[in-house]
Image (cartoon, rainbow, N blue to C red; front, side, top):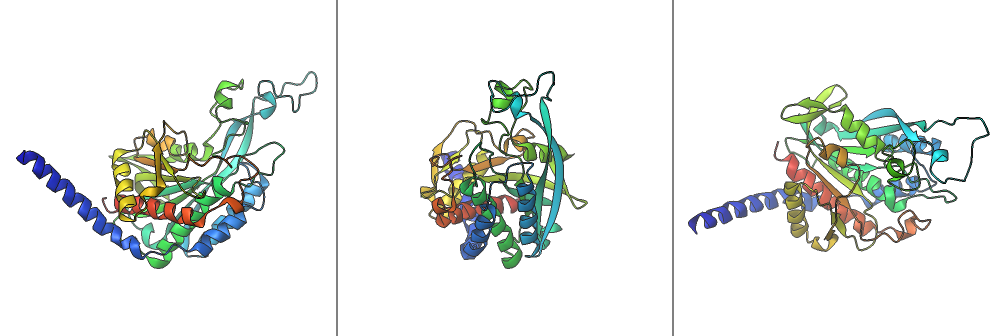
Length: 341
């Protein structure tokens, strides 16, 4: 019994210490004007992976970040994607007789990394990430206000707040990452592996590319940012956070320490209503890093899917309140990890 009381005391002290740390974020005001600018910029038109529109969106995101005194690094990459014309039962177009169409098509993309000047010299980082491409839907001008503009806008606002308010005084910095090519080229997420002769994974191109670029720096993995190696302590992924009545779903493979920090932050900020039910394994941009052994958590709302990949995923369906709640929770988790190098 004495042992149990000692454990309870230690756990209580740990929680109290982390709660005290979170008090720093009580005074952080995430700028709604910033998120609105990004939302409007990213929902002008569809911008799928490899498109000219996506290239322009990347340029605008980079310019917006650099205008706030943030260090930005562009990571261009190319990826082989399945040729949609070779999808089983696809009748949209067919090759001329005698031609042998390629099974794959090369697409060019760009991951975007950003960090405040104050965090740049720190030897370790916690990443907060989002994808910024939209799904290509045949016959639909899909602008993805929730998927992916909401999380992209939140990430810009978080980075700008760190740069201007300098609230991250921790030993580890907070790195923002915008992944290209999260959405599948084929109509469905698993078509590449199940219904296409190329038998290839057709999604999360940017995150898998960046994960492959990490180098081992025992006991961690390191990321090279403008020639400076920084150990990666955790990856906090944001995705589809703009629906009213936010209900974040916890992935069954969520790292237990990050989950504990999330629930503590939700309690501290009185945001327990924003935590939804637990889901099975969720395949998203965090998976490539989890496979390396890096702690990950995916803050995604899989409880409000009525506009997902529908023409109705527009600004009229976005809640700034939900975006702010997700920003507070993601920043809190990253802040707590960054305080423990």
